Image (cartoon, rainbow, N blue to C red):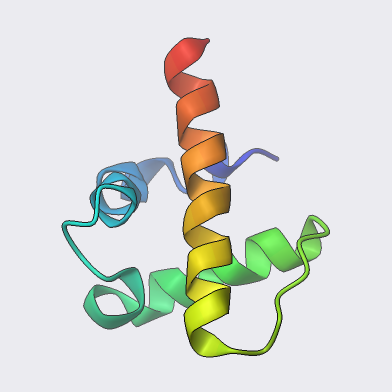
Length: 71
């Protein structure tokens, strides 16, 4: 399952986080946890440092959301 199919109702929120308009972990902590779990289940390794982990998650979102725009 892809990010966009699993979280299609929250895509605008995820795009806002990618664009730096919101902090996903502050604005929507439940969604943040769900997206992090999604990436963990898909093999992304997080460091354990909250700031680094947030950056890793945003980088993953950027990749996934850009691939949707190109397609």
